[in-house]
Structures are given as C-alpha cells and as structure tokens.
Image (cartoon, rainbow, N blue to C red; front, side, top):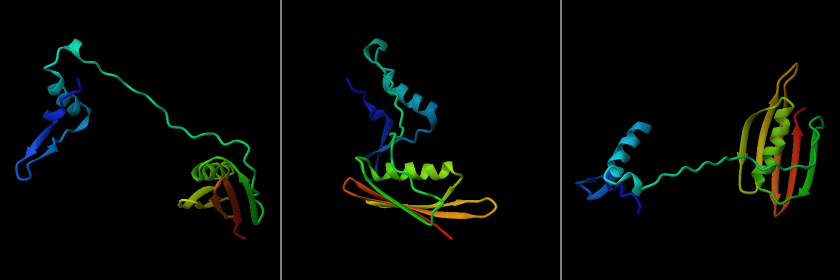
Length: 143
C-alpha cells in the first residue's frame, strides 16, 4: 500500500489547491514522514535504499591532436556523444597544465578556450563537432 502523503500538504483556501508544507532539513522531513507512517504497524511497511554512481564512460583510442602546432585537426568515427568526446580532449589539455576559461556547447558542436601560464601564456581553442557518427576535432593555438 503506498504511503498517503496527504498530511504533507495543506489546502490553500484562496485557490482550493494542495500546496506542500514547508519542510526544512532532514530532521524536518523525518518528522513530517513520521506523521504519515505512525498510524501503521511497523511490520506492515518497509523502507528501501537505492545507491548509484554516476561516472564517465571511458573512450579509449581517440586520436591525438598536437598542442604545439598552430593548428591540429583529426576526424574519426565513433559511437559516442559529443560531450563525451569533448571531455576526453579537454581532459588531455588539463593534464598538460591548461585551464579552461570559457566553454560553449550546442547540439552538434562544442568549443572551449584553454590557457596555460608559465614563463609565457599559451592559449588554445578546442573545437569539436559531430555529424552522424563522425567527429571533427580541431585545436588552434594562438601565436
């Protein structure tokens, strides 16, 4: 039998609609739920917990782009999402000491500007676009 959460709402007189009662924090929610669960015998209800982890899918074997070149481009076919491919190349830049300073993404293209400071500031622009299962990756370094 599902819990009746009617007690967690109150009727707004002016509109005749149910609106949630303001419950603050974990303790407040526990108190509000205890009002709903209290009338039931402990053996007549159960609780359950679900646990999950969100992580990135590893995309191995993507071709490299040359950060030292003024312009480096690669294209390849892969069954992946644009965001997954972009993150792989952005992570490669971060591993070389670059920090992302600006990023934009659309349905079929993503662009990021990365800067690495040292004796001299280096800026590269990462462009990733997708057409069907073909990805085009371009890295452009500022002179």
